[in-house]
Amino acid sequence: MIISTKSASRLAGVSALALLTACANMSPQGQSTAMGAGAGAAVGAGLGALIGDSSESAMIGAGIGSVVGGVVGYNWQRIKGDVEKSGASDLGVSVTEMPDGSLKVNIPSNVSFDSGKSMLKPALLPVLDSVARALNQHPELRAKAIGYTDSSGNDSINLPLSRDRANAVTQYLASQGVAAGRLSIEGRGAANPIADNSTTAGRALNRRVELYLYAVKQQ
Image (cartoon, rainbow, N blue to C red; front, side, top):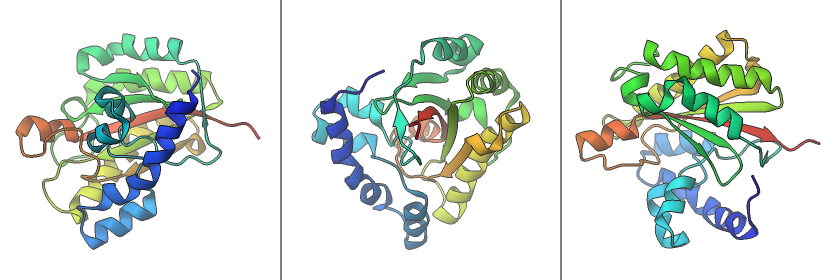
């Protein structure tokens, strides 16, 4: 996958705005935590005006954020197909190649965690098994899990919960043989919503874990 200069410049243009945007509506404590964690590359809902293409802005979303060494393009065709065949589509788990070269596995709340909990639901495990197989077969790849909540509650609840959910995903991958050093997590709480938090359906969509697979530049 090759990212065009135009796409790269768009990503660069929104990156500086992202950290401020993602933290704008958080409490001082939440702002500090999110800034320290690197709150993400952009807020998808607000990118349409900057980019001029709402479909592209939704695809970019908050993104994986900064990665040591930098993300490079990768041929995801086979891995994407394997994850989709594991039952991902039936569960509502989407697998998307991102403009920055990573592969995003978006895990919605209805198949991942009960409300307020961080224990993985059994239905999701075959999907995570396929991700673990891909990582074990391709040692050059890394994975980062980013947890999100809806806007219910406050940052003191949402941020730890989002981290715990991301951690549950990576801990399961580690239990399937993926080296812990290849896995990382981040909890962003209620930041970067992808739907309307004023509706039940929207809040359900915002409660999610985004699992990114990526390759880094070789030194």
